[in-house]
Length: 46
Image 1 (cartoon, rainbow, N blue to C red):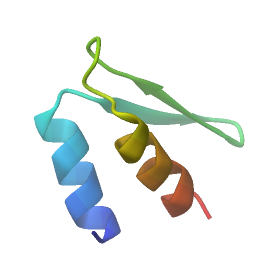
Image 2 (tube, rainbow, N blue to C red; image 1 turned 30 degrees about the horizontal axis):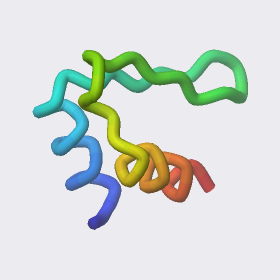
Image 3 (cartoon, rainbow, N blue to C red; image 1 turned 30 degrees about the vertical axis):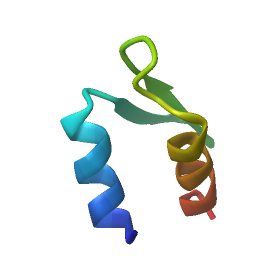
């Protein structure tokens, strides 16, 4: 999954991402951010 696909997937699940300083933050409905998606987000940070 490339970064564009990841962002589209997160958006479809109403998961918000934002940067504050040098940190990436997220907000999501309960149970919509799976451990697998969180891992993909962390991998895409670098």
